Length: 320
Image 1 (tube, rainbow, N blue to C red):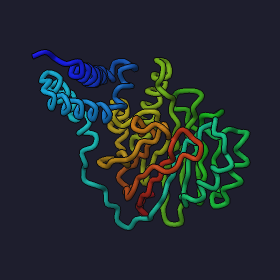
Image 2 (cartoon, one colour):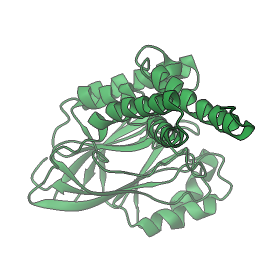
Image 3 (tube, rainbow, N blue to C red):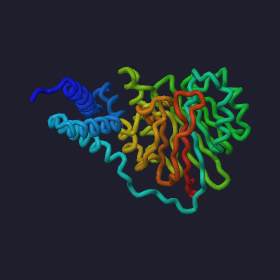
Image 4 (cartoon, helix red, strand yellow):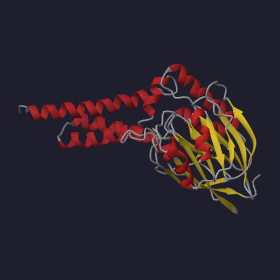
């Protein structure tokens, strides 16, 4: 039987999709050993969907080798993702206080900073963390946040640090370098009327070159050491510049003893804000056993390349 031009073109297109997905899946297996391979782990959901759908199409056209390759790639990727998303018993905190925490990388190149304050006000958070707030815009943005009278701005290093604003008093603020200069993080205590929260706000390096990936991983290791044994209610939010599929992120969870607030649930990606269907969740929330999660959602972009993240939590009143 002579293969038609249309069938050849279909085979070629499916082969490109399936073998491309297979290559990306295999390269991701080396994520712990080389920075460039780690980038492929961020796209595991997209790899699984591409390989699965292209494999089904190949089966319908009776391209057996392509269909088997697509199925194997999809199965491998889902197998790697399963331990990350498989739901564990949820934490239930008795005698708890409801708390809303927002994290938002507002982008130093944002062209409409005048909308940031009103947007954050509209979220009615207890605590909000803003990354990439330029010094030249800080006073104007903070002036638009009358519901957040308490500020910690000393960790705002250049355009890449963090600013914490709160409805409640902030105690014992500290600037953390996490062993890398240029991207400061913050540690402080949020004093609620009936509870205390040990709170970390982070903005880690992006991993787009080898030196930057090394710096990001150094920060992750330093953060894990800082968080290990964090007492009472403990929470970390911010731009981690990695997804939960990366082994480096999983090492952070293992070594710190904290859990992903989005564990076991589908949460939309946060970056880039215009990037569907390749949007990645790189803005995270981590908590210890004294913090219960009720909802994690992605919010608006308001001119940023990130979506904000809104974390509804319950914290123990008695854990101090």
